[in-house]
Image (cartoon, rainbow, N blue to C red; front, top):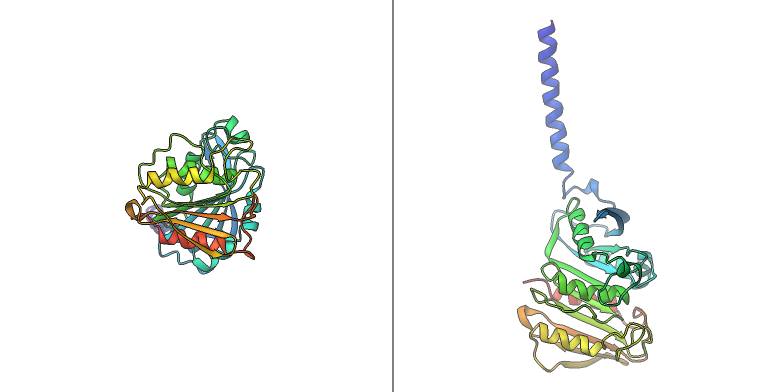
Length: 293
């Protein structure tokens, strides 16, 4: 009788092991049960510091396929929910079927290099490590298309996007900066990165012509730097998609990259309203046109 019980116990244990293993496999990166459609907050630990980000999963996302990923960095002093609201990128993602990440900066600031900004700069926060940890965390629940990882941001977040393009050119295919120029130096990307820059001519916080509180380079200096880094043709194609917006595009750059500038006449320090121009959709169109080769 004791032998029978031992045999029975062994059989049951074996069956439970098979069931548990199967469940773990089913709950891997392609498991719908591990994803929450819409918004959720996730946490990661980087260099001993717990940090968080908002994850936006569009409805109907095909998790059997590798999906594009867009990082969105808030401005200095803002919460991630602020840029999530005024950028309107959630709706673009829901239509375009890509994943959005809204990370939170330390003290709501980003260490963008040079003299910017706030607590993140003062504590020399490693933002690139944070970004890489987010990607590692996401890879436990979804499959990410490594050729379609992008970054956009506003103000301090836009300045950070430039730093990441310099430091993480192996990861990011393209960035879009809104009201933020590049101060990180020296910028020595190992791979070309496509760049879109959007800036109001009347921006007093981050002046289009440079200077301001942090003595930032001008938008045109930033563009010239990336035209050189991406080995673009010297001259740009210029057009006006609507009145008061001038679009300059340097195309046919190295490895199929491009550098583009949207100068907003009378525009201040802010994200272009969708009622004025569909800038968020334009950013996504730029991204999809410039994956990594």
